[in-house]
Length: 380
Image (cartoon, rainbow, N blue to C red; front, side):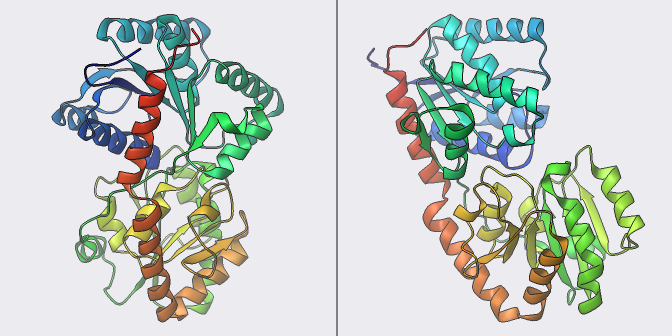
């Protein structure tokens, strides 16, 4: 297979929020800028789809339920095959487990090369029967997949251990972000009624149990007992939001915590924070951590998944055991009391993002893999 034209890639995702959503959008735009002909099939909201169209990317609304529905999933696979054949797609790039299954089946039907990006740890959080089914599915499809991307080395090892996928089949390409302009943190503080002298401890996350925000709430009474003018900010939404608000009330800290809900200007809210915390229980890499570090914020995060590949403990942040509110509180208290450490961590964190986790590096590495796979004779 040879090309006398731009390589046409179909970027497929079910739906996403937070870091995975940002990764998809940034990559699609970056590949377009790198000379690819980019199509997008996604289940995002209308505003996000328009954002992609404004970049000259053709968008196909593609709504796929998260749970397994064999008949509907088969129909969706056929739809993907139809798009591939009608548009002359050279390589399919799918993101996340469900889109990865449906998309790759569709690409096999269409005889199209496929690349699959794994963003997070699906298997460890699944019950035993589901875990076995997911592992078997991944192992079977991996044999017919031209390229697999893991967003961290930890995730690559998980694919090897849990699914038996050979290490040489998986490329590690870190998520990358574009460095932000100055945020409007003062405006955010003013709108939320936070004093400019207050220390703000914040987190940005999808509000689901696996993100561990409940442990940040548990840490608040401990932090308050040692420190004075402190406010806590939880940025994001999700199905667990109501339960988290109730937990804050039960802990007697509802007056200390601001739940902002979904926001479109994450950089402004990060700029309003003094310390960023992500007490997650599972994480492929952690785009919100990269964003906080890019804003020069010191980070406290769980020592899980790919996070230790970002944070060098004691150099640009602190790593704490997952689910340990007491240790989390101790790290936060230390940073509150030591402004020079906050400043040093923030500076070193920003430098690390610039060096290792830029959007340009991510796009370049992904583009090279997509181009290589587009020239491979398919396994279909």
